Amino acid sequence: MAIRNIVKLGLDGEEALSKVCKTVGVPSDRMKALLDDLIDTLYESGGVGLAAPQVGVLRRMAVIDIGEGLIELIDPEIISQEGEQTGTEGCLSYPEHWGIVTRPNRVVVRAADRNGNVREIEGEGLLARALCHEIEHLDGHMFIERVTEWVRPEELDDEE
Image (cartoon, rainbow, N blue to C red):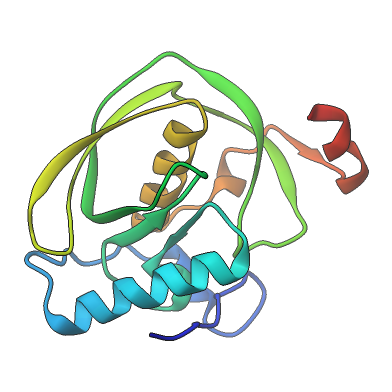
């Protein structure tokens, strides 16, 4: 597998971050290899989630690991959401920038795995935030569209 370059705002390739991704369907070997690259790139970056457009590929795929194990998402869709949480969020495609974002506190997502098996994933708190964040990437949106207030790096320690 390979570590891919992460597309960043303000640099070549950033147009991938504002485009709607194509569905995958049953993953081909090529799509499974992309999934492996997303996993390797996520762990190398130290982030909690990474979507295919963040490596310049316009396919509805993402990976998440909030410290509770890897979640692979192929063609994910949010099927229900409830509650509200507001907190600090950042993005690997906009490094060194953080903002206050409000998201659902609980979501249920339907997605396929690398073998095409569809399942539902329930997430609360940070997992709900990560699921929403990554699925938004697949629809050509970024967290910066939801920021109500920017947070300076020195303020991050105050929140923890």
